[in-house]
Length: 505
Image 1 (cartoon, rainbow, N blue to C red):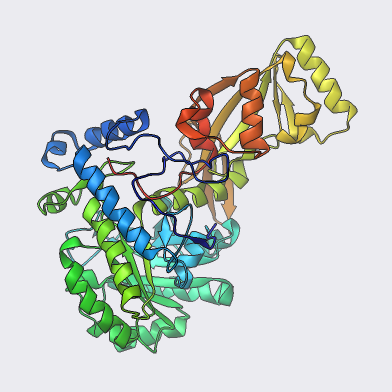
Image 2: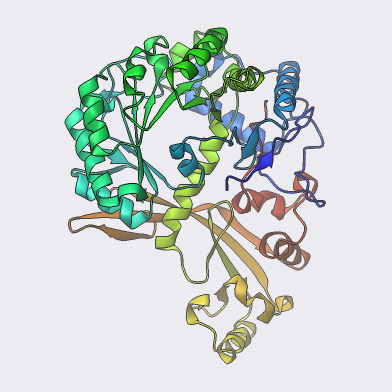
């Protein structure tokens, strides 16, 4: 997933968010600049963003076509300047990959669990996306954990390689945080990388020594919460093995950050992680008052924040600071962290005839036809002594769900093909809206893994089946994108992850 792919040149061109690879192996592009033409998927984003914020949406300054074109050009310039010096991966959404912190590498590989140890913070950062005003129970993926033992069992059962302790502010509940770190490391040892997020205000030598003795591998400071002060961070250097700074890229602090980056390197900071500012209902008033330019997407993000992050990455390389900078874009988190969750949960709810797409969706392929033709197909499968879980016949005997392994045995001239996609997720309790399984965790707890249909059912016939097989089952050639209209253009989002950074519109 990480890959070692050099940064691609974005000058005057953008990647479509449904992804795809061109017929000659080059990532395909939109024929028209998004600033000059609104595509249906873009219009859906705009409408969803407008609905999320209601009347307040009008208070926001979004890109107009000329501004979008200028922004695309500026980003292209920055990426061109980084070409050959920084490495990108995760479909072009994350850079620089050369020296990621251990925790970030585990995240990019899909093996990270984030435990929100509490929900209260003692700082009031303008960019914070949630209220942070209740202690609550330790929670991840909506599932609560009353004891460290239950969380350890959860990490083991779902196969995680890294766990982070977040909040809120974890050091507001130091006993709780230490208990969970201790239990995780005692059980897993070096098999589990554990890190803790903090704003640093409650850091002191004693707590750092206790965290070290508990086995904490990495500590991450949000120095943006404390005016970029490094005094508390200095206490951690030499005590906790890896010290990372993780902050949003704040546009108005760009020049200030350059001097702080030099100071970080001299202090002994191992890594700098920069995040993109994202608008939420909670931080709306604070962000709207700062004269930012907002970008439509699955969620509303801040244009200047992304450009600032890329500029700071370029500065680090230009000045040879020796401070590894990782830009963690919103689209990376939105695509790849969600992908990791879907993949992990699918193992518990997938059926034998289903497959998992590269985008992390369970795909069900069903032949539709007359009972005689379906019956002949079933007999053909039985004659091959195939595993029974690779196909499933409906009660009406007019539907036959099949695994792609059976494709060579099927005469498609007699059938149409129905394609359905499902996403899997964890819940703390049964919703009774969708099929689910209860996954036992330790001796006392269970986690509900539910599967829910996404999108609509797609019905393919004739050449559409041939094209679907070619592009998505055999991976021969590549789907050319919006130029190929029809059902394939609609379902490609469930088959492939989007590539590249967010398109500005």
